[in-house]
Image (cartoon, rainbow, N blue to C red; front, top):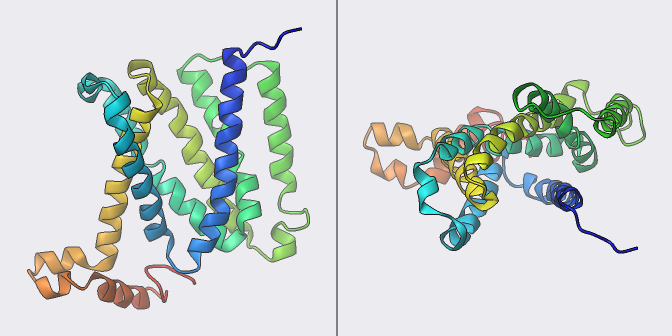
Length: 247
């Protein structure tokens, strides 16, 4: 019997590779969370990814896609994923830990299935239904197993952080698929989404650092000292390393 690499198997392999990447990233985020607040950490992550795709894009992207409707779909996706989803995930790593964050982060399909069925007309087969049942059972047991909420004294509300990140990732997938139908290029999709997210996070961090206020007052010397301003703002928000940072 010969093994045939069907499109379904290929898609499953790509999905497993993506899941492995997400699982590995939460441990790196845990290390970075010790010295940087979630918003700044998300900016670094999205900025590096955007730079990488910008280097690859000239070799694989059709310039005609820039003026297509696909760009609007990818840009809409980039408004909340990966920007906001990464902020929630990094905050979750700092509060709930990487293990619980990764476990609840696997619930992304739960939030992607409903819009895919209702808006895109995809079918809900028995395999998908079984997967939903298993993930729902795991989600219900997560707060009570060893290493979960009860064992580590993680507050119940903290579960909303990884679940919120999963919801944003899940809801973004049907939006991204609409763009992929018009511009079938994962590289271009990632380039636009990460570009929009990087710009959004840069604006959020600039406001936190006080750069916007410095620009409005034409205080150029203050504008040249963003880290000092950021530290000052961080103290006013109760965090030693930035707005809302908990160290």
